[in-house]
Length: 296
Image (cartoon, rainbow, N blue to C red; front, side):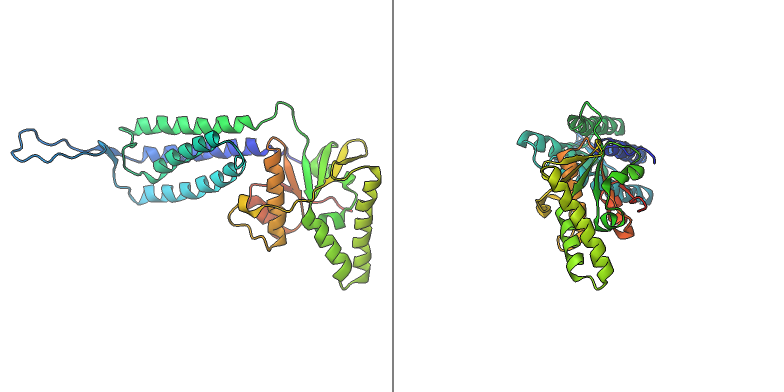
């Protein structure tokens, strides 16, 4: 299995792609200067305003802008989630940087319009560095172990989470069982039409309950010496998550919970374990890595 980088590393790599896209846009752009009034004009009009403005964009530039809007705002929403509980000072720095980057993409003419394209590139470099430095604050000096979050079907397919080593490619990792998955297991055990399937789900639940005999599942218990398993109780907070997630959809609740786990430990690599193609698709949209559960 190829190595999966932490979220901070992935965001840095994606930011580099965005920077290159913006440089491409700037190279195709022009900044012009307002002409000063003729001092010998008998009836001069005094104009007070910015000295420079972005020239009108052509169709090629508009296509570049559209591409950038999609990639940058998609990136920024995920970046912003990591700092939603940061200080006012940090929030102000992020807002200022975001405004400057957005102005360069939209090419809004105003008092902050650079005098040349080269100056605009320097502004871009400075703001990209600011984002990079903020991400650096979240990185831990030590290599953290992966955190695996199995969905309901993954636990039913392979209830022994110590076997997930084959999926993640290493023996030491943590497993987090989330409330949406526990609720789905209980519902399947109670309501599924197939009695044999209900028995299978019941065995998964009993296995999870059996782990409590080894210690507190909220704090985490260790199995096979290298695997830590814990449960979390809080439901996801949809006021601080990606805008397109629906709180009434269980797949979206899983995604929102994984994002919260990632935000709590951004230097860790939080991986969703699922074979559900729709959930995999949503995970990719949310910048969450995923792996298939191992064969039973």
